[in-house]
Image (cartoon, rainbow, N blue to C red):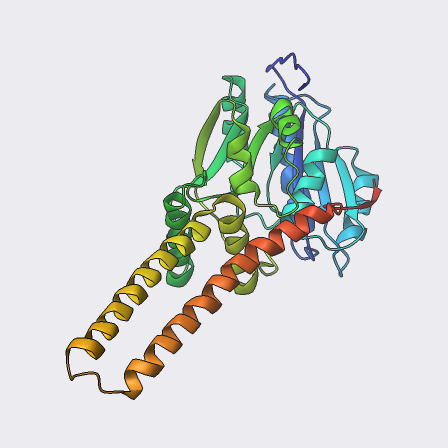
Length: 321
């Protein structure tokens, strides 16, 4: 049975969770701006003085962890969580959410593209009774045409498949402690938090913000990684592709049966049954292609079941500061 939480929404203790992968170029500025944000909110009486920022090092190969350790020694509001190896953005974020302390946890990327001024508005929504507050981009005009079209296509596909997701929301969100505890009940190894968090339920709200330019460094989300995340999202939250295979199989079976009857009729009752190359090779290629496609989709789902059945840890923490 889930633990009951007595919630006092006045001046909550906030933990800001920041996943990091090779972010040495932007990290000093991120530490500075997040520290200033906490100072301002404490002075304004919006959060407790014991609020902290938790940087999660996802197996960085540069000096990211050294910078986190130095900042933690200088400033007690800064904490570091180092994973034993690279486990991916979603697992690093989950490690931070499950390790950080606080009445409220806010997740944000280290690149400073998410507008920090949206955080006070998120906290205001929490004060009004919301347990989950989604940071949603007001528009995608700053993106290139390909990224904008691909993002719109992805969100449209998720809606069409029936998966719960918030359009133009990444991982910039606020979650109350009881929402985070509820999130722990989800045991998926194949993580897509943008789809899992809405399943937690509780009262939620949206805060819109303008996406900023990246302060420094480069994006760690290559096209291959974005496609992999999209594939995880589809196969983790919808069985529609499997149902589509069933429908496709029924259609092909119906067409094949009709062709068989037509061929038999032509052979028995007409003199038009002329053997031809097209009528032989076309069905072979068509059915062969459909079989390979269907096996690929089924194989993707079997792979997900294989990963879930092993129940390997989603992350391992090497050290904390």
